[in-house]
Image (cartoon, rainbow, N blue to C red):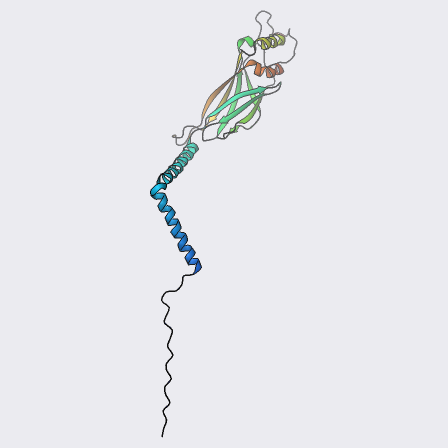
Length: 227
């Protein structure tokens, strides 16, 4: 008689996982996106809408100002600060958007000072003026200031007389300084054509007195005037 062995019950397979637990990284990413979405939504609607609009407009205006500044022509100005026996000290600045170039300088004296108008040269500082808020220092000099000729004596006015006028009336007499500068030109011109303009600054003669007296030589007062 043959015995039949009972069949073993088949092992049941665990049910396939259908919903896996999200990883910590995925959870953080999703929560971050959700928070950012909430922030964007709050800026675009509700109480933060005016703030977002203001920030956007400020950004646009700032970009516009930057572009307009970069293409606007140069605008160079200057002032005479002080003087010493060898140098006349200026400060120069550029309020435009492009670089300018300093070309030449001259001084114009009132008739009462008995000094000929004269060209002066740059002795220190850069000849290029970039559009920066801070001014740059410029030093001017000349080897000699020429005195006018006295029509009565036919000799140059004495230095002592010029010094006396400076002492008594230096605060009321005006010395004019002229600067010729090459500006960058108008932005609507293509290509741009640089233009030479002349800027003017005025100062009381007493501010320029050390330079005047330092540049007038001490010579024989009886020397005849040059023809």
